[in-house]
Image (cartoon, rainbow, N blue to C red):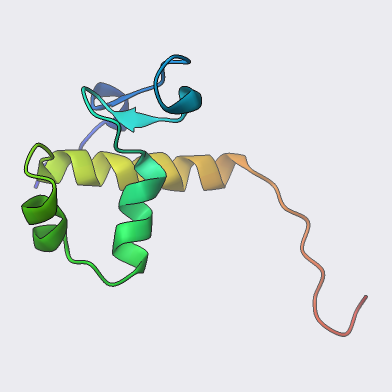
Amino acid sequence: MTEVDWKDRIAVNPNVCFGKPCTKGTRIWGSLVLDFLASSSTVDEILRKHPHLTRDDIQAGIATGTEAERERFIPMVMEGRG
């Protein structure tokens, strides 16, 4: 698979899904794709359940989530160090 630029496949529209990043032309949030994968769904299962998505759309959803995580800073406290 070639490298996918998620910005070509993901749209943010304040009038669609409360402005959450979605696969263009759908209401499938990038984070929903990550939820599917985290719950042990395979890419093939996601594509069967959502035939309007492509493998590139799924890759874009993953890329959107990873970029959002990189941009977010959450202070972490190590256990036992209060």
